[in-house]
Picture 1 (cartoon, rainbow, N blue to C red):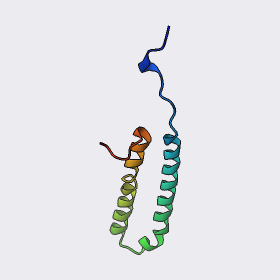
Picture 2 (picture 1 turned 90 degrees about the vertical axis):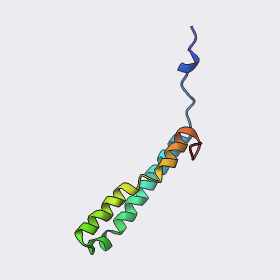
Picture 3 (picture 1 turned 180 degrees about the vertical axis):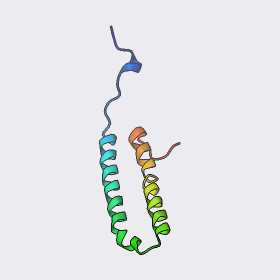
Picture 4 (picture 1 turned 45 degrees about the vertical axis):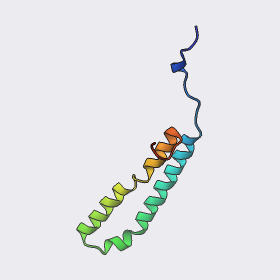
Length: 79
């Protein structure tokens, strides 16, 4: 009995480990950059400080979309 062609697992890709390492390094660098701004941000009014941290907490994900796409498809952009 042979295995159906649609059941054969795909070959492992080197893109996923490389992409994950890149993501970990990016998040570490991003967190360190935001932490380096902490002293400067403390001088701002509390509401503005909250808005800056909220924006920084959301903004880190946007640059990861092309990386995640590349990890899964091998392309940087959707055709």
